[in-house]
Amino acid sequence: MFHHVKDLQFNARVSRPDPRFANLLLEQFGGENGELAAAMQYFTQAFGAKVPHPDKYDMLMDIATEEFSHLEIVGATIQMLLKGVNGELKNAADSSEIMQVMEGKAAKENIIHQALTANPQFAVITGGGVTPRNSQGIPWCASYVNSNGDLTVDLRTNLASESRAKLVYEHLMKFTDDPYIHETLSFLMTREVAHYKMFEAALNSIENNFPPGVLAADPRFTQQAYNLSAGTVRGPWNEGEMPGMGKNWVYVADPIAQANETKGHTVLPDDFNKELKATEKLDKEMSKIKSEEVKNAEPEGVAQWSDYKPVKN
Image (cartoon, rainbow, N blue to C red; front, side, top):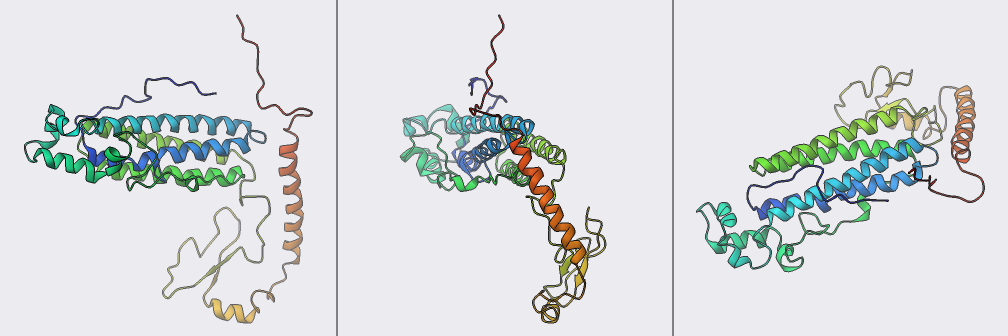
């Protein structure tokens, strides 16, 4: 259940109209790294998390709802930046707000041209309204949403999503000198950081969160780091101990020779029978744990999403 409060989470303000920046800001309204994409991503991920991880379900729904409120902030800012573009554009070009944009450097026709070339859809298709499209006018697409049904995978996806969104806000701040817009973008950017840390904490609170999914990694092929380009640089990603694995990387200097010697990794020099049996046992244990995790949380009888409680007088 959503309840709309008309006051924004952050008091969005603009000093003057700026249709060109309004067009850029559409990237955070209907773009692939924007607020609508984030809201829908966390919203859809939450459904699969409710039974096995009700606490994470609560977190995902809270953050999804906040992302919808951020979408409202972005949309409101875009609308204010288009003041003078709506309605009678030519007449509005003589208003004081539009004159602030011109600052004596452009003719009335230039400001009209600026508004239309920034995004013709503002005036021609949407009549000055904000629609879920990016700065190129491309409609928002559900393919922007990543929901994989495995909470550890989804949370790692969300860490990347919040990182990209923060970066977009950083770039946007370079294209406006309006102090009020800077305040708004700084708030939105900082909330991306907060969400990142929330997702990180949630991931760390899940036991057995690596590797993603249920099945363990095949011990025969886990440790190899292949030299697949001339002058490969050595570092902690291909030498020394593998992070958190208790094993060392095995650097393969000549992958072609190794493939020939092992007949495409089908005849290996080392005996991995013990490790393979341990992995097979672990796969069965994890499969049972993951399955029971969901089954034990599902109620018997009629399925009911909500548990309505009487209101106390």
